[in-house]
Image (cartoon, rainbow, N blue to C red; front, top):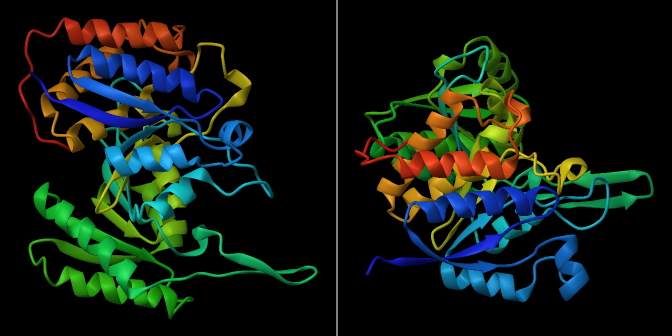
Length: 346
């Protein structure tokens, strides 16, 4: 009997349920067996459980150790904290992983981009530790620790060694934030000495943004603290077509959550027009994490076929197909494959 994988599913809100359901259908079309444990999070969960992250969801992730998540709306300037941030903190998902690669026939300024972004996920300004000192004065705290900086650095260097990547740049603003970003750099430098086969470099974050839009090919792996990683990873998504096309993953020592990195797009929710590619590519990372490399390759081949064929693309990438029609096309392409030969995992 083939192994059945228990996975916590967080459909999210807005277009989340539509795109995650499309991804689930495609995953199941590979023949891999899943036991899905589905839970709401955010405002929908609060209405039902009076908690933004219900206890049942937490217990499910503790049990399955793997989750697939759609977008969850985060209020701006008030309301509850980011569900993404809370889940990362709660489960010590310290490594955010964003591979940036082109899809076939999506017009972009730069073809054949192949970047990996590793972002520290648990501290820094992005953690949202802030308070009002006196009325009209708010203070945000940027916390950088040796433990977290060393941990994300080693995670990135181990990935590079195991996946034949040759260069890592640590991205910083240590010319201004000499203590906090300086500590991050010292930890990265120390770890780099353990991996002599990997070329190590350092670039200031603002210069990195300029360099990326001028020549992204000069980079291989980018390593950075939390807020810089959030900004730069979205910039890099723009190099290959936008957030609707790129995957994301959050890794800890005990569990991992794979998620679409785009917004919940409530204006098009329920219209069957959203593109499920980002959550599907995130699900591919999940399959590889689960050891289902053959199934991941079949979906990857099928997704490439649909983008090359172009007749069943969603409107955001120049087509006219709906979410379900796009998923049907990917499933048909999976079923048409007689066999799949494994290729290197990126």
